[in-house]
Length: 169
Image 1 (tube, rainbow, N blue to C red):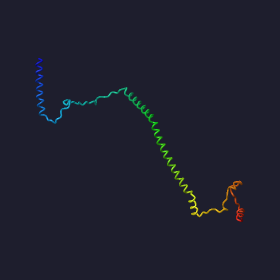
Image 2: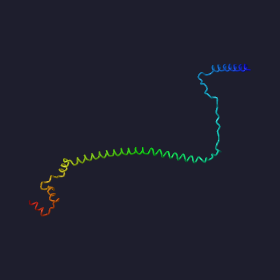
Image 3: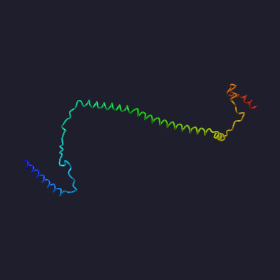
Image 4: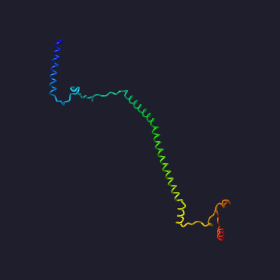
Protein backbone atom coordinates (compact mmCIF):
# COMPACT_ATOMS: atom_id res chain seq x y z
CA UNK A 1 0.00 0.00 0.00
CA UNK A 2 2.84 2.31 0.68
CA UNK A 3 4.05 1.83 -2.85
CA UNK A 4 0.62 2.52 -4.26
CA UNK A 5 0.40 5.82 -2.32
CA UNK A 6 3.81 6.82 -3.54
CA UNK A 7 2.77 5.99 -7.06
CA UNK A 8 -0.33 8.17 -6.87
CA UNK A 9 1.62 11.04 -5.37
CA UNK A 10 4.24 10.79 -8.07
CA UNK A 11 1.67 10.68 -10.83
CA UNK A 12 -0.19 13.63 -9.37
CA UNK A 13 3.04 15.59 -9.17
CA UNK A 14 3.87 14.81 -12.80
CA UNK A 15 0.41 15.83 -13.92
CA UNK A 16 0.58 19.11 -11.98
CA UNK A 17 4.05 19.83 -13.35
CA UNK A 18 2.87 19.16 -16.91
CA UNK A 19 -0.17 21.39 -16.43
CA UNK A 20 1.82 24.26 -14.88
CA UNK A 21 4.39 24.21 -17.69
CA UNK A 22 1.60 24.50 -20.22
CA UNK A 23 -0.05 27.31 -18.29
CA UNK A 24 3.20 29.21 -17.98
CA UNK A 25 3.84 29.03 -21.67
CA UNK A 26 0.38 30.34 -22.52
CA UNK A 27 0.12 33.04 -19.82
CA UNK A 28 0.67 36.75 -20.39
CA UNK A 29 4.24 37.78 -19.36
CA UNK A 30 2.96 41.15 -18.03
CA UNK A 31 0.25 39.69 -15.84
CA UNK A 32 0.75 40.13 -12.11
CA UNK A 33 0.70 37.17 -9.85
CA UNK A 34 -2.26 36.64 -7.53
CA UNK A 35 -2.37 38.26 -4.09
CA UNK A 36 -2.30 36.00 -1.03
CA UNK A 37 -5.77 34.89 0.05
CA UNK A 38 -7.19 36.27 -3.16
CA UNK A 39 -9.53 33.33 -3.47
CA UNK A 40 -11.20 34.00 -0.09
CA UNK A 41 -14.48 35.92 -0.13
CA UNK A 42 -16.00 37.62 2.89
CA UNK A 43 -19.72 37.87 3.15
CA UNK A 44 -21.20 40.74 5.15
CA UNK A 45 -24.59 40.08 6.59
CA UNK A 46 -26.63 43.11 7.61
CA UNK A 47 -27.93 42.93 11.15
CA UNK A 48 -31.05 44.84 12.20
CA UNK A 49 -30.86 45.89 15.87
CA UNK A 50 -33.73 48.37 15.75
CA UNK A 51 -35.91 46.18 17.98
CA UNK A 52 -33.21 45.75 20.62
CA UNK A 53 -33.63 48.06 23.62
CA UNK A 54 -30.57 49.05 25.60
CA UNK A 55 -30.82 48.40 29.32
CA UNK A 56 -29.71 51.08 31.74
CA UNK A 57 -26.56 50.43 33.70
CA UNK A 58 -27.05 51.69 37.28
CA UNK A 59 -23.31 52.26 37.83
CA UNK A 60 -22.83 54.17 34.57
CA UNK A 61 -24.31 57.39 35.98
CA UNK A 62 -21.90 57.41 38.92
CA UNK A 63 -18.95 56.67 36.64
CA UNK A 64 -19.95 59.56 34.40
CA UNK A 65 -20.13 62.01 37.31
CA UNK A 66 -16.80 60.84 38.69
CA UNK A 67 -15.23 61.35 35.25
CA UNK A 68 -16.71 64.86 35.10
CA UNK A 69 -15.38 65.59 38.59
CA UNK A 70 -11.91 64.31 37.73
CA UNK A 71 -11.87 66.43 34.57
CA UNK A 72 -12.92 69.51 36.60
CA UNK A 73 -10.16 68.88 39.15
CA UNK A 74 -7.59 68.49 36.37
CA UNK A 75 -8.86 71.67 34.73
CA UNK A 76 -8.56 73.63 37.97
CA UNK A 77 -5.07 72.23 38.58
CA UNK A 78 -3.96 73.17 35.07
CA UNK A 79 -5.45 76.65 35.41
CA UNK A 80 -3.71 77.21 38.75
CA UNK A 81 -0.40 76.15 37.21
CA UNK A 82 -0.79 78.35 34.11
CA UNK A 83 -2.35 81.44 35.78
CA UNK A 84 0.86 82.88 37.36
CA UNK A 85 2.73 82.56 34.08
CA UNK A 86 -0.05 84.27 32.15
CA UNK A 87 -0.21 86.98 34.82
CA UNK A 88 3.51 87.67 34.55
CA UNK A 89 3.26 87.87 30.75
CA UNK A 90 0.38 90.35 31.00
CA UNK A 91 2.29 92.38 33.60
CA UNK A 92 5.26 92.48 31.21
CA UNK A 93 3.04 93.81 28.42
CA UNK A 94 1.62 96.45 30.77
CA UNK A 95 5.12 97.44 31.91
CA UNK A 96 6.25 97.86 28.30
CA UNK A 97 3.17 99.98 27.54
CA UNK A 98 3.90 102.18 30.57
CA UNK A 99 7.54 102.56 29.52
CA UNK A 100 6.46 103.65 26.05
CA UNK A 101 3.96 106.09 27.54
CA UNK A 102 6.67 107.49 29.85
CA UNK A 103 9.01 107.95 26.90
CA UNK A 104 6.33 109.75 24.90
CA UNK A 105 5.59 112.03 27.87
CA UNK A 106 9.31 112.80 28.28
CA UNK A 107 9.48 113.66 24.57
CA UNK A 108 6.41 115.91 24.89
CA UNK A 109 7.95 117.64 27.92
CA UNK A 110 11.16 118.25 25.96
CA UNK A 111 9.20 119.72 23.06
CA UNK A 112 7.24 121.98 25.40
CA UNK A 113 10.42 123.16 27.11
CA UNK A 114 11.93 124.03 23.74
CA UNK A 115 8.75 125.93 22.75
CA UNK A 116 8.71 127.76 26.10
CA UNK A 117 12.36 128.74 25.72
CA UNK A 118 11.63 130.04 22.22
CA UNK A 119 8.62 132.00 23.45
CA UNK A 120 10.49 133.52 26.42
CA UNK A 121 13.68 134.40 24.56
CA UNK A 122 14.74 138.07 25.00
CA UNK A 123 14.96 138.59 21.24
CA UNK A 124 11.33 137.53 20.74
CA UNK A 125 10.15 139.58 23.72
CA UNK A 126 11.90 142.70 22.33
CA UNK A 127 10.27 142.10 18.93
CA UNK A 128 6.82 141.80 20.59
CA UNK A 129 7.47 145.00 22.57
CA UNK A 130 8.33 146.89 19.38
CA UNK A 131 5.17 145.58 17.66
CA UNK A 132 3.00 146.84 20.56
CA UNK A 133 4.91 150.12 20.91
CA UNK A 134 6.21 149.33 24.38
CA UNK A 135 9.29 151.18 25.61
CA UNK A 136 11.64 150.86 28.53
CA UNK A 137 10.45 152.72 31.66
CA UNK A 138 12.06 155.99 32.63
CA UNK A 139 14.22 156.14 35.73
CA UNK A 140 11.61 158.03 37.75
CA UNK A 141 9.00 155.33 36.94
CA UNK A 142 11.07 152.56 38.51
CA UNK A 143 10.45 151.82 42.17
CA UNK A 144 12.94 149.56 43.90
CA UNK A 145 11.27 147.46 46.54
CA UNK A 146 14.51 146.64 48.33
CA UNK A 147 14.54 149.99 50.19
CA UNK A 148 10.79 149.79 50.87
CA UNK A 149 11.09 146.25 52.30
CA UNK A 150 13.62 147.38 54.88
CA UNK A 151 11.32 150.13 56.05
CA UNK A 152 8.42 147.70 56.45
CA UNK A 153 6.27 149.11 53.65
CA UNK A 154 5.80 146.97 50.59
CA UNK A 155 3.44 149.14 48.62
CA UNK A 156 3.54 152.78 47.80
CA UNK A 157 0.33 154.63 48.50
CA UNK A 158 -0.11 157.86 46.63
CA UNK A 159 -2.53 160.46 47.79
CA UNK A 160 -3.72 163.25 45.52
CA UNK A 161 -1.61 165.76 47.49
CA UNK A 162 1.45 163.55 47.20
CA UNK A 163 0.81 163.12 43.52
CA UNK A 164 0.77 166.86 43.01
CA UNK A 165 3.91 167.32 45.13
CA UNK A 166 5.68 164.66 43.11
CA UNK A 167 4.97 166.54 39.93
CA UNK A 168 6.24 169.83 41.45
CA UNK A 169 9.68 168.49 41.93
